[in-house]
Length: 247
Image (cartoon, rainbow, N blue to C red; front, side, top):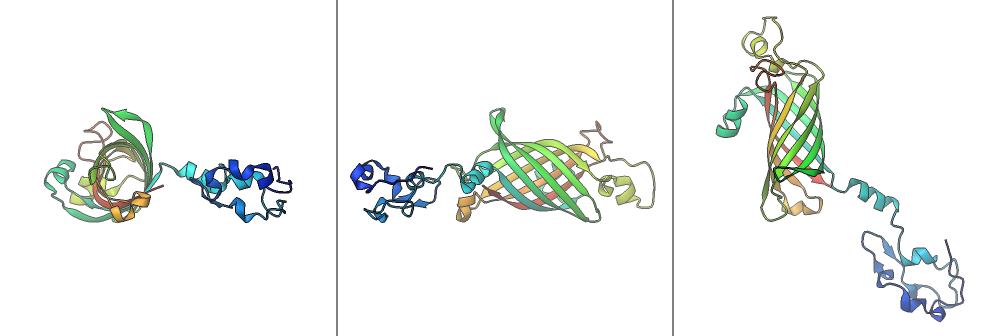
């Protein structure tokens, strides 16, 4: 780091060549000192270092943290199990709720690909089941999104397809054993590993635009893809509500 050791900043003409950003705030940087703050006849190490006078380092801890987090979003949502089929939930809003719940933390980021012209984002989830089920679930999903609630329209639509892994075979997905015949111990219909699908309606919250805060309604769905991974009767649907924060 080179220090100004000349008798005067003005004598060497630096005051005329320093960028205007010297006084005030640089983009994405902290406020820096004004040349006028330096004593004219005492421009020594007690005054300012040359590189620190011009601008704050581009790789300062704050700048590096912002660079790493840029584009990521963090979401939390809570849902309740419904015995209604996936299609009926979407098309008729018909729900038959049961006392089984999920709490979900999700981290997502756009990916440099599109699907049928729609931008994609990847999302990872950690799911905690409570109520009539007590286990964890881990999901990875690619979401195609139409619209941006902060650019033109007040909402966006998302459709996601991925995989889901539960830490135990979920009771609520074995319908013959748990919903109709609780005491019948037959072969379990569902599986720990299933297909994961989501449909989401998202709204921007304008009062919190600084962090691109959004509220959303989501159907959280596990299934066997029409008998491919498990019998057609297996699977689960959770109607969920949550918030998403951008960085």
